[in-house]
Image (tube, rainbow, N blue to C red):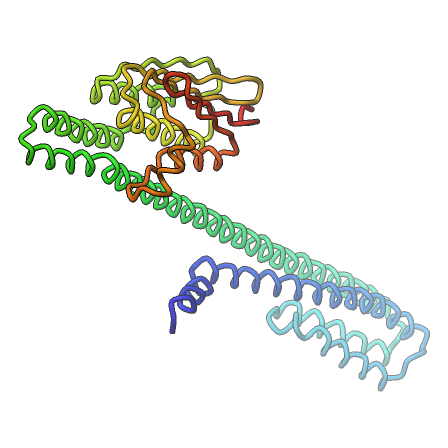
Amino acid sequence: MNSKIKGKLKKLFSIEAILIYFGLAALSCSIYYKTRASVLFADYEREALNLVMLNNRILLGQISPLEIKEKCQQLEDKYFPFTYFDFSLEDKLNEMLALFKEKVQSPVNQQKEDSLEKLILDFQNEISKKEISLYFGYDSLMYCSSLLLLISILCIIFKTVKQRNQIKNLQLRNDEQQKMSRNLHDGVAQDLAALKFYMQQDDKEKSDFYANQALNEIRYLISNFHLDLSEDFEKIIGQILKSFEANYKIKTRLYVVSDHMSALSQNIQMEIIRILQESLSNIARHANATEVKVKFTEIGPDFKIIISDNGIGFDLEKVDELNKTDEKKHYGIHNIQERVKLMGGSVEFINDGGTTIAITIKNIIR
């Protein structure tokens, strides 16, 4: 039995699914039997009228002893479901039928007439009480079944949401692991390779430089893994810039001109954090910059992110060409483009003596 079939069977026979089956069965049965009971009690109401008419026919001498006997047997059979468990009701029915039979023998008896009318009325009242009690039972079963179905459905929804969140968290972790692996490969691994080369050449100055580069890169990656994402979004951005400045000795400035920055969805905030980390990592490796400015602003419903440095700049076309020919791929710019695309935004890379990354996310401010 393969895993797909096992998965389907597990879902079909989960506790929530069994509760739903039970709830549906109970609800269906209660509706079905309540409908049948309605038809049955409607028939009993007609039968109650027949009792009165039977009494009148006896008074008028329009019915024979044999017919009354047959009619009494029919009544006994019809009311059997109620009288079987209720002895007092059975006694009333038997007494009423006995009076009907006696009345055929001696029709004119005022005492029997009054006693029979009272018995018919009492019997009708008892049947009405049975009807109310039975309907209450069916209604209670229907409400309980509906409540059970609602609870089961809510449990399934909660479980589904929880599973989706778990999958999402796993994807985020996997994404972070891939990013760290890529950063280690693109940054630390290359720095260590250069360190090894210059150590073999006995070039102490360049060996020290690449050793510091590798150390700074590792420190920066570790600090990013210790971010408290429950903090205010602006504070998280400040922590990232502070860590970058401390590890790479590159000055950072943060400008926030937005009242809705912290109200952005968690998904958008995570993507912005990754874009910022990717941009800062590229600046540290390639820009030769001494200062980085990060601006967050909004124009109407659009949210803008501007990351600029005073480094040597780069040519986007040359980077694309390099990626086609060089075995050492440079994925930083591509990763930024992909993340901006996921948010439904657009990005520009401007070479103006340094590099400016201008990102616009449209219709995100509510």
